[in-house]
Length: 165
Image (cartoon, rainbow, N blue to C red; front, side, top):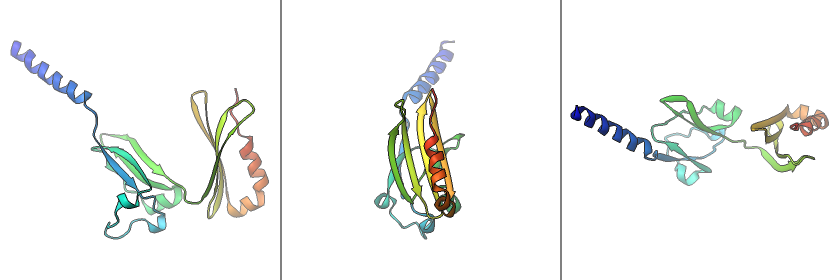
């Protein structure tokens, strides 16, 4: 009986040490290459030297290869996932176009982060704020010809967004 408890204690003790030890990470160097310049031949580029951002990736997580279509349509630059729990993932997106950002407060003091993106084929206005333990992101998008024609209306829509309460 003592021998059985000894084995059980050693197994529990090992589990506790493993659970208490910090996870190991690898540093990922992201290059934020455009879709046109993505996927060079031979993989000879030095990612560390050309990195525009970095983040930690847990050991054991797998990289999901990003296609040129994903990169070109939604700006996804890098993505990793936990193969044991596939719903756990981290990823980064970026926008290349002309981006203007500012902070504004409404009459009640609510803080909004406001972005205007003048893209090659479209124009976007984005407002982001947190209220009542929720993150709100409001988007107004239009193709460039429509933006040029309907800018006044689209700006009004964008500027009308606010949280209540």
